[in-house]
Image (tube, rainbow, N blue to C red; front, side, top):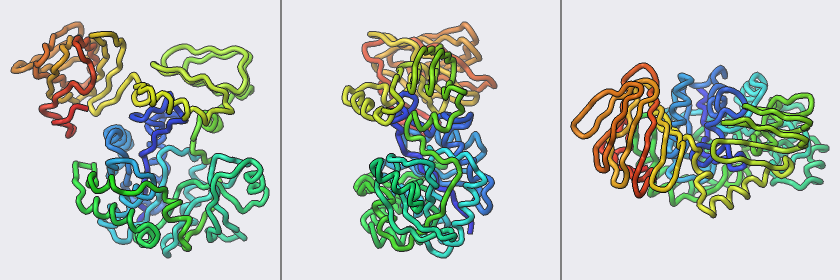
Length: 473
């Protein structure tokens, strides 16, 4: 039976702020290589023997266009299930299993997070193949990472191999303290819990019926009333939001007696913090890892990521510096897990830096907020070839557009005309307007907004090529 990859792409990655934001999280970023983490996950299974030529992705509404675009750039076919609201991994996998089994009752699912790193792809694929017979026979197979050190940040899986793989799972263990983690390492039968699974969809659903019937009932009901929008699958939101929030480990794996584990020694990391990211990045002879326009002197074991300007450092040891267009993080590497606490405080202050980058991606391209002050702001719009913004109007702002690169086609009320480089136009408050780019090169437009309210929700969409008409976000 074909292996259907299921990619869970709903996380926010708050410990990797300010690079990762809730509206554009770490799985959508190229943190380790030129491909984004989502793309690397999809490529990981492309040459896996027996893998289907399409995958299932569980994402949320806010990320849907970015997910679709990134997979499309790989030529990867994907059905994208949009969670109306995050409910942890058990409901997410249940949605995927229900969708898979509706197409093929013998579906075999390989469940992976979109934001993990695996360096040794051959070893990963071999571990999947090692677990295949057990999964096909009706076992729930998980992958236990062969530990390299006493780690307190992961849960553990206990399994005694005795030369056999996979082996029955003896226990799932919570994150230990340092002494217990060292004991686990020495005993040799404890493995890091990777959160990756391989099983038949029907086996998973049968076990969920046994151990978490409420989750299954709600997910089944919401999928029976799903709506389809191209490659997007929308479970019924009203029903799904009543679902309990629970992880697949708590809801099922810790209770089931049909779990098996395959050891995985493939350079795995969940990249759960900046210090973890440095561990999988290249380092110089002093242990420094530098990205972007960065220069250091007399520094050791220091991570620097510069996005938009020169970042320099002198005399630092074990420090993290991350620069983005609108925020800078400086942290002791030993406290990198506490970045989440910092983000929580920013959220309490309703700081927009927790949600969006200065550059915001849309299905038609992107906009970068260059200047923002009382009653005016300046943006740079980049419209992809063939793309078109929604036909819209504003109640509180006027807009001036200047084309600085490429060519744009403008709709303003009943007029339609083209603007070339160094040509401009003015959109009054209430004018119905849009920008299109039917040409071969990206169009770069400087937009100056003036008005008493400049929020992105001051949009009335009358038509939209991306299914957003009637919305203002």
